[in-house]
Length: 204
Image (cartoon, rainbow, N blue to C red):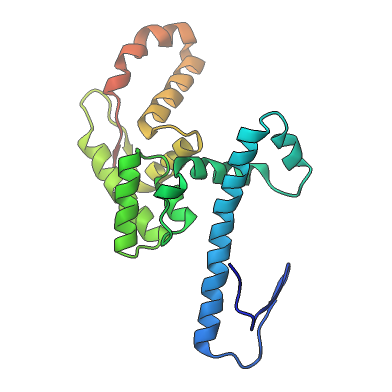
């Protein structure tokens, strides 16, 4: 995967000829984007390989480079969620990241929609948010209801994804942690364990 030879690339710069046809300029941009997006997948697969092959040494090896471990960890999480056979070449890694916390069937359905409808990452995010708000509203019970904005739901979903957890499970765990801090863990264990399955969130 290379950039058009009309472009002169260096680590910190891109030089283009003074007279460059529009179509060539567009092609170079598409090539650069493909390299950037592919490199994220490459880094994710590279870290997964290191974790599997050098389980006790890969972290020290990374710390000796200029690579950011947290960024690599995020790439690796997405790479593990999507084996190469399930990755969509027509979509960016960020598209895949948006659905990574969903079950595999849901991942494939949303990625298929995004690919067939040529959604941008932001468009996919908007459709996911709308579906999430609808789902949470439909799942609401009379036992526990929390009214939240779409922005709050989006923020909570990202936090749950970062913990590799389902949103509802993550929220229940966080509420229990807060209750344990306020009341003491013994009281919480006795009063809320049986109520977990009935908790839900609705959004404005």
